[in-house]
Length: 297
Image 1: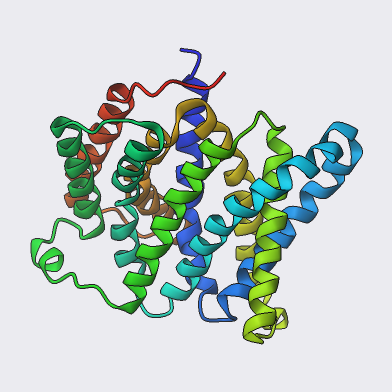
Image 2 (image 1 turned 180 degrees about the vertical axis):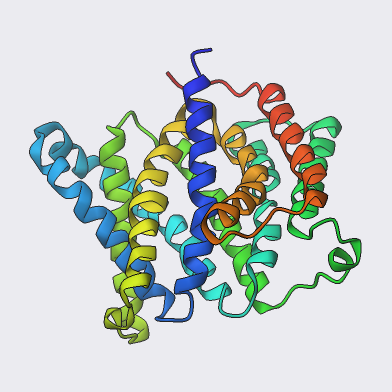
């Protein structure tokens, strides 16, 4: 029961990330993805800055955490760049489908990083989870599923998904008992540094003035909730539960998107997708019960 709160936090971050697909779609194509990601990280870093500066233990922790955060933030940044850029040429439907590969990819990488094993039963569970999410995304339309094809945007987003897997794995490998708040701050600050470097090398403009009030609200949501809060929660839950368990909740993401669209945009949920939601829920629960990864205390 001691880990129940961390499972609830993992569910919360899945909900927050589900909402980010909607906001990211609104922002994609308005200005370049490096500038968008830089702004996203800067806002989140500035919110944390006063808290970090107020306590000496946080300030002193920056020196040791910074080099490792450079590596973690690179993977983190690549995911967001790929997402913004991919949404210019592909749909939320396709990205939502590809995102369900993250739990399986995380499990495969954990074999090499943490000596974990994937049984045939577990592979079946991952397959069921993917089927459930695809059912939700395609609304139970088999013809639409069979017509699914990858374009350049899809391939780019797939690369971003792989980068997110590496972020989760690197967090577990590089953690040295640092203050979590310091790790989050350094990750965001280093991410902003990577984006600034990319802008300078590629000679891309910021163009933040192109964002209207509505788009600034979407950026605020992405910065505070799906960057700052989500990064903190992901790092905390990954250290306690392990990357496999945390990433398994991704199977619930399409269902969360459907409910968010219901409450925000009034789009009704078709009853045909409920079997898919049920399959995704079952797969997620089984993965939580089957994974025996030892937690860090």
